[in-house]
Each structure stands twice: as C-alpha cells, then as structure tokens.
Image 1 (cartoon, rainbow, N blue to C red):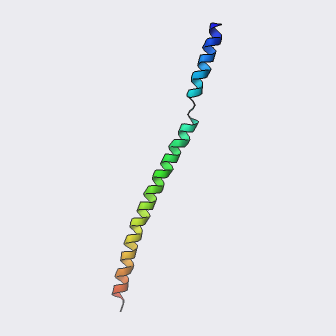
Image 2: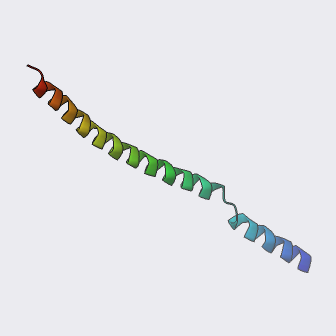
Image 3: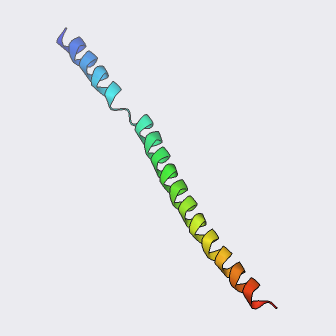
Length: 61
C-alpha cells in the first residue's frame, strides 16, 4: 500500500518537472529580443544611409 502511494506521489511530482514548455517559452523570448534588436539596428542604419544619400545629392552639381 505504501509503495502505491509513493509511486503515485512520484508520478504527481514528475508531472510538474516537465521542462519542454519552459524551453519553448525561452526560445520565444530570445526570438522576440533578437527581433527587437534587429528592428532597432535597421532603423539606425536607415537613418545613416539617408544621410549619406543627402550628402551625395548635395555634392552633385
């Protein structure tokens, strides 16, 4: 009887130790962070490229 209760308790505790969903959430957070950094970097790059085109346009006769 005690071994059945122990086995049931172990199955119950093992149910909460599954980390597959946690890894998926972590990958989602990493993907969101990389996306935000990429958008910011591309925005800053666009501003500097527009500045370069303005400099070239002003240098042309």
